[in-house]
Image 1 (cartoon, helix red, strand yellow):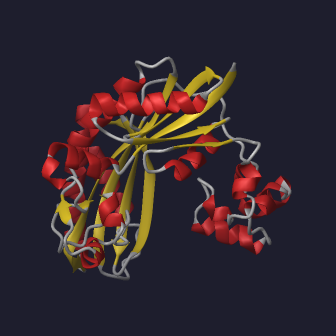
Image 2: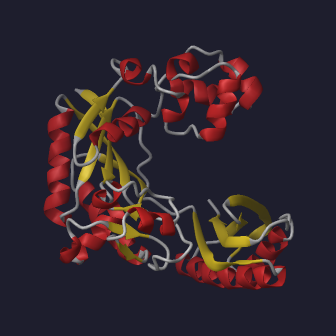
Length: 340
């Protein structure tokens, strides 16, 4: 039998959960994010497909989303509800004859041995829908990268296969930024080397790319161009690597004494999350988004693992002092990274 990797990706997950518990919202444009205030300066976490038809996308400023789709129902993010729905889906997947690797609220890799992966993928979709009423797309591949890339062609609610046989036919002429794992900055650096397409990246010298992007990351990006990924899954239960909180302010902050107060308040919320996890923190990070939209992140490793709220707050305040204070602040965030 052939070994396959399947990537299960829940469709419009946050919006779908909201539509599930509020049936009157089905078929309507739903936007989830922030505190649910359409006039706030938060960003969109997820938009339903009905809202996406108006050009609403994840990461878009909420005010712009509402301008594009005035009839959208804007809802605050409800993380506990999404975690519970995710647990339902993962429980369904674990009843199937597969290995399961959770990679987030709404995604998982499955490892399955057989000769008709499309039929099995449709069985997975049917099981998830029957038990949770949620829809998912399934990408099929001969490794994790190709399976995940295939899901982009499967959404919403479909099945698609990408393997070594059709990798270059599918992505060869695509820009390098089309690959999962390559962002705008990396794409720009590759272009400086004369590498613009996936095929050009696959044919590039790992050593040459490594000289520009680092000895470890250079060869890794070349491997992405070649469609290489893992064939064996990590089947330990998904454990969050960090906990974070952030706040977008309705009016910019220019007083840095208030910035420190807000960082302290965020630290208190993160510390409560850490206490619920019952795990030690080894690193603390701070995010500062300046007006209009430039974002700076800084972090530091703690002297020793801890879950002490005062230690976390002290570290975050120390980190924020390293941020250049040249513009008004519109968003602050604090992240605690767990040991292990």
